[in-house]
View 1 (spheres, rainbow, N blue to C red):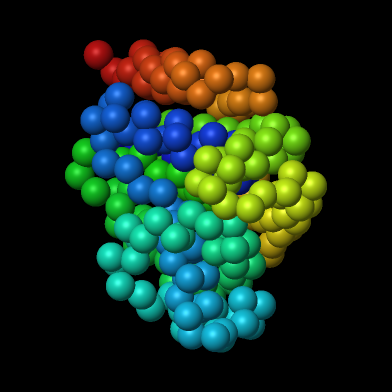
View 2: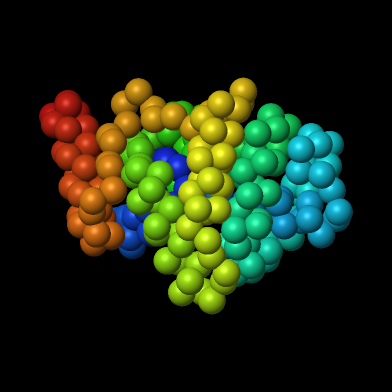
Length: 214
C-alpha cells in the first residue's frame, strides 16, 4: 500500500505521515529532506540557489546527510524551497523517491508532489493543509523549543513566500491530486489530525476492497 501525503510547510503532514507509517507498519520517507540536503550541500559549496546548474550540482550528496538535524533549520528550509523550483533538481531526485514508494509492500511518503507526480497511482492520497497563520504559529513555537531566534512576522512572511514558490513553479507545483482527501488541521490537535488521517486511509482501503471482484 502506498500512502501519499502532500501539503505546504508546517501543515502537520510530516508528523501525520510518521504516525501513519507506524500505524500501518510501513516504511516512511520525508521527501522534503532530500531537497533540504540539496540546499545544505549547495550552501557548503558556496552555490547560488537560484542558479539551476549550482542547484543540480548539489544533488550529489551522501545519504547519511539525511540524518543531520541541521537540515531542519529555517535557513536550510528556505534554500530547499528555492532549489525545488528547478526542473533539473526535481528530475534528479524523482527516481530516488519512486524507488522508495514502489518497494515491495509499499510505503508512506510526504512531500509536495507525491500524489501528483511521484506516485500518481498511490492507494491513498492525502492533502494536509492549514491556514498560513496557524502554520506560522506552529513554526514559531517549534523554533522556540529548539532555542532558535524566532520572529513571528518574519516566519509568516517566509511561509507565504514558500507557498507562492511551491504553488507557482512550472514543474510539479504544490496542489492536491484530483482524487486526494483534504485534511485541514488548522483547528485540530496533532492527535486529532492523526486520527482523522487514519480514518481517511481506512475509508479508502475499505472502498477499494469493496470494489474488488469476489
